[in-house]
Image (tube, rainbow, N blue to C red; front, side):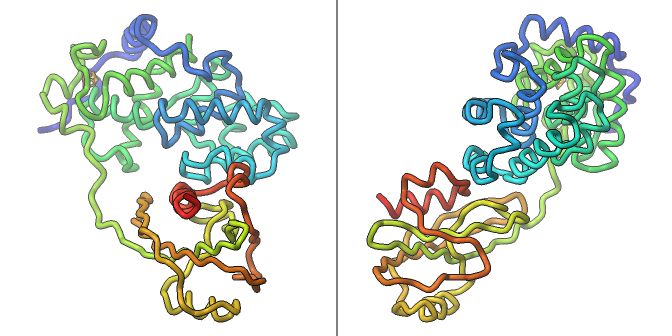
Length: 357
Ligand code: SF4
């Protein structure tokens, strides 16, 4: 079925007014970053919300803000401490960029988050939509938001075909999002459009009967709600396997290595990895250990966006002084209670806690 022209759907002023009327009655006004609404708090929340839903973000946000009360505290904190407060939230590049951006703000903007769109966009980890959201939410200035919720809403409202991640679809969505954005009540509007997408125009089972846009919604009129937006084209996801060595001494300390800052789990602490049992055995011999691997633990599976990983952990308890597993990477022995102070990927934390139980 051909998509309806965007011109047939609500005109910008009407759209914004209807949305704000809905927001005044049903919108979320008690989110922790709304009370009080500060530029720093809005920024942290927007970064956390980039890949994560509101309910998951809330406890992380509260812990993060309790530890890094100000932008200066964040900038001055060790990256390890920042990552430890991000452990479990995933997409750790967000935390590294947030930390780096805080340092840039201290150096270039006198510790104040800039209130210009271009200056925000120049900071690490801030893209077009996030910069727009910060402009609107933190400064009540014109800023256009096009996050996942808003993309879904606009695709349905205007009957736009294609997966929203495609450039050609986004080229249709940005002008629509810009045209709908009013000149006033920017902070409320940006929260309202996210809320409408998240709570009414939901991915599954949207609540069209409660939607203020229903009478003008192309997809609703065409009864195609479950067809739009188009899903991401399926591709086969590669499977990878890795062995992780849980080397534990008689004091119950475990050897961890810090990963390079770029790449998967960048900057987090992890267990030494080996591609095959043979390579593991060669390393154990090099370390002066019996080449017999220790006890194989239950495998742990983890899904990244671009591949699936199966980790085979092997536990080896030792009481001899060891050569380092690698001289090229930072490493150290950690007790259970020290884990709270370092950044760990969720599957690694799971393995560590299982071997200590
Ligand atoms: S009517 Fe339904 S599909 Fe259309 S915008 Fe509202 S909730 Fe989404």
